[in-house]
Length: 270
Length: 244
Image (cartoon, rainbow over all chains, first blue to last red):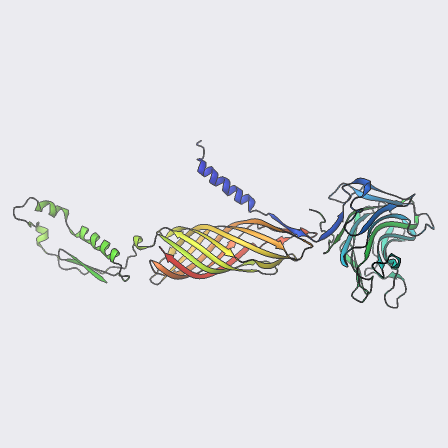
């Protein structure tokens, strides 16, 4: 068989190259993701949380509670997740647990997403907070900090887990307490990853907003005053009181703060 | 109309362009056909020239031959250069971008089917794909064949070929906005018409469409693949064609 002349081979190579280059390329035009924690690097030092690009962050667990990076469960793509173990002893003091905290310096409005995994159903005697927002009345004054919204796991019946939102600072004339979710009989999966995403806008007037999604389904839309612009804190935590059985284990993975919604199918890294 | 007379044979041709070179060629060809080479050979042998052979002694009546206007191949320009302002738009994008610019195309050869090479320079335009606002810039190049159907007043042509383009997309609203350039590859069809003039400048109008089977995907976090750039680009231009 006669070999192709050099010029024809060159021409064919060019054509193949053009065909390959012209077929279904991905044009990466950027990202609306401001910060992520996928727990894939740094092990238990949790470098994605400390230091952080948004002011002060922290990762801590108050003994006997523990927090570690684990490969027992992980949300794909990836090989690791944070394992938060809390004893949840009855009458545990509020705030004792395992906390991943983004403190201050966050955008005045953003989307906050985290994936959770419950290896077993847990009976919640009092509360089990897994995500929360805090505020400052005066952004530069730490003494004006306060609790704002808590996303809680609940156990409405044996073996069934659900969510509730506790509002520490009521809007208008409403007293502090639970806010009605838009979905009744909301069930949170056990032994499966689920995503909670929040849109939070800090504002002292009616333009403030908190919106929640569970696995992409909107479950709450709460307009109204939130915290003063200029200081936002977001915590991914496992803080429980009167949890059975104990210790209660919660895995957390793929946390993100973004300018647009991650959603159930979104990506936080390429 | 012009008349050629050689050895009492007369023929009239229709030729409206009044091109002297073309008429001279036709006259030379007519003369070569009229003159009998055998008669020339015999004349060399006779004593008192001119010696005309018997058939030549019978003068043929002046013939008036109705002829058709024959477009001579050689009268077509060797190359045709076209320059025109153009607008090109992608079909399927949620926020349709219209790119303005200029197009330059070269058709090479005198035949009815000739190769063509074209390129366009376009201004960037803003568009949106999958909710991602983008500034889009495109540099298309095409290579193909043109088949021309000549008429008395208007020449029509169709084109078929390959379309290549460099396509650059830059995000406008993302928190971390980036830009990336890719390549499009597909087929191109075009239709056009121009005033039938053999040489010099003549106006033309054309429509074209590029079909891309696998256009680039626009990727942005956290959405992932936001969508594809258009599968079909359509364009139109009106300009001047220069026959060389």
